[in-house]
Length: 606
Image (cartoon, rainbow, N blue to C red; front, side, top):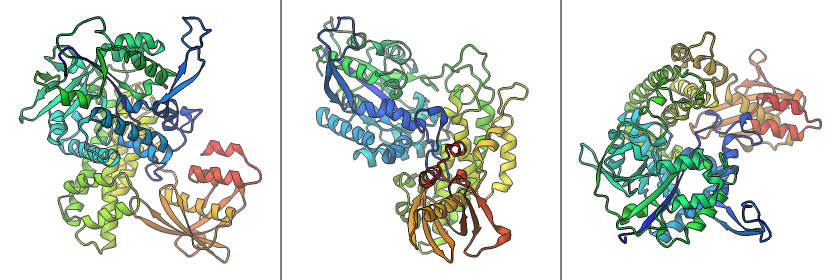
């Protein structure tokens, strides 16, 4: 690298939490995301998809010089993933795989283009779940990092050189765990490290173990003005900030790194993708500023300046990592006094539940698996993003007796128990101001799934609910996490029953053939009929759990009733009635489309 070169890096943190129903593995409708079905869909439309197809327009020659919105026509479409550094969390990528494959393809193609251009890819890894790693145990921290690195390798076809830490939350143990996995660098806020010279160039952290990790400090002032100021409304001003040394002859290398949420470019700031593209186009005219990515910068600059980490610290909490476990004062609505007393009790309740789940897994796994249960869990990262056959094959290889189907199924359940347990600590559950929010509800759904998979729900649930009751904002009569769990997290109808009823209804409405097989949510469903009775056999694609139902369909449309029995024989005393609004959402909507009189009021129940 030449002595006076100025480098520019734009890093986009792309992440959405796991929003899937833990039993059906599909994202339910989220009314707060209107006009879209859910927040993943909305953020993808407003941001992620646009970043893959950012549009640059020619200026109208007849417009005034001050009219920045005047457009004469589309000039070009640019994949900004080919020009900007980014991380894409695994839980987002899993959703993109099935629901927005064009966006996922743009990321992969953009990364490949950057490798070809700079010798190093724009994409960097992230832990599998968006958890605050300093608050995780060493074992859970290691699994999250390993799963994230394995998912990255599977998607991008190469090993990750860098990793993004959720909320930039770091302590010395976290950096040591990252370095132990062979990762070369991470990106942190400038106020998280002591001893750097302010040049923005890579610096070196050295842990007590002797391991080292390169840190690329981003420009905190620039990030704040882009995310929370009006800088994206003025591409010229943004380009000006991107090129702070345009009038200087530099004696030593400098770097300006912008790191911010990908949601900034389109969701928080409309047309932010276009503004970014225009700003980067303006930057390209400055000969002493070169656009690059963090991996290429680190590879070309041997970081020798050693720094100390502010341990623990994060980019979104002024009190270390207290935002995710206490009423530290960090919140979105600064006009109100801090009332996040619920954060501590919520984490305590989930910590206790997780400990019980880990103990159960270790105890059962010791007699079930060929190898150490925790090594098996780490290896599960190779297939955790799949369903069906890969999960069965992994479990069959892992158990002591591969011919024992009961062992294989229990192994799959235990590994899914661990997946659900890790998801309990998704960081956004503690980020916002209130306990009665969609983010808390989601982690509590995973808690309910943990209890079910443990096989000890009847014994453990009352104790868990009692622990959650302390998670309130402190006001008399305030909603508690226990209220949210009972009202919104516990399934009020058995998911498999809902799937079986939907299968029967759809088969009758669509004239399903005997012994037909279809997919409903994450279930494979085999349907047959004899003498006016429907028979449904379900197989969960993640756990391998099977069930059989028989039943009849009465009526049609919204007034329809499916009367089911578990097993292949009808028992009048055991019949359960399921109505269309209890079906999985896609099947309920499909039923409406096939009925003569579509009743939109039904959608209110879905």
